[in-house]
Image 1 (tube, rainbow, N blue to C red):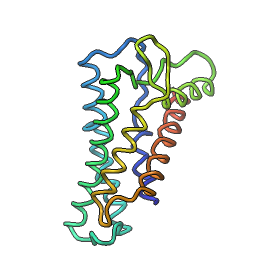
Image 2 (spheres, rainbow, N blue to C red; image 1 turned 120 degrees about the vertical axis):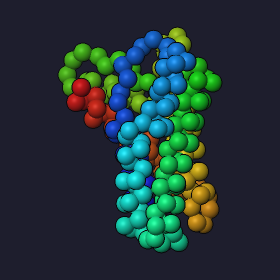
Image 3 (spheres, one colour; image 1 turned 30 degrees about the vertical axis):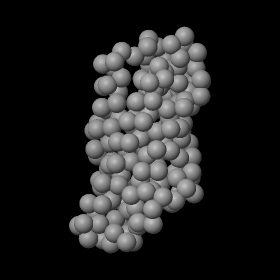
Length: 180
């Protein structure tokens, strides 16, 4: 379970975008590339794999070079699937999943606004609604990783992993909003 929490920390390192105009196709593509293959993702995949390797989680993969490779593939697949589903579903639904512009005022006000923005997506009209792409992406990534690991798909682990990922997305955006 600790590794699930560690994986979700990738969202803490993601920057808050303050754009308010609807994203262009080129901007959507760039946002996707950064989320799926950006520096943060490429650095954190081996960090997560190393963490699991030290814990020997899952134990069926052992602490061999092959086991480490399986862990790298597991986390890499999860993060790419997560980003693909978030950005693909947002594009198909015409939603903007970038964070809202942060208001002037106290750090706490900006941080609270950023955290709430993590849970919402913006319609073309500007109205913010619950972020279906965030939930779909977090769930899809957790499902793929769980199915890939020995023992197969574990819906309990998927549910917990999804909740942790969404919670840490909100917490991460709160911290980033506070620091801006």
